[in-house]
Length: 193
Image: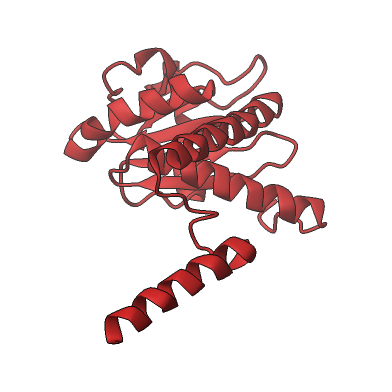
């Protein structure tokens, strides 16, 4: 009797879920291989749309590091994957003056009085800007990865501190950027501007 009652209850619940999809948790979070593949494709397409919008806005990543930081070296592969998959440049700001491997072309360090100037006619060197940026963003722990959303919104978002996977970084970028864009669309101003 008990087993028959459980089976009947399960059959009824199955029927109720099919008739009322809002009660079925698997509608939004599929567990079948087909459902997972479809969800993954949708997420990638959505993520690419976010990155396309960011590229149009002039967004880029900034990766704060120190050469003696073991975790910074461990994060290089993930950061380079994010750069490749997102299409957004990643700049390395070295807090000790030594660029990370594979990031030398986009590395900003304190280079002394001969440091390259940010722009023609500017009195600021790249190193001075790097130091100021690190102070303003309160960089205390490395590795630290930020996303700058571009001059129009002038928003910096921390997307990773310590070691994180490429998937975690992509998910955070998508989530955080949607939140920022929703806030800006609703008239919420950046208080740090």
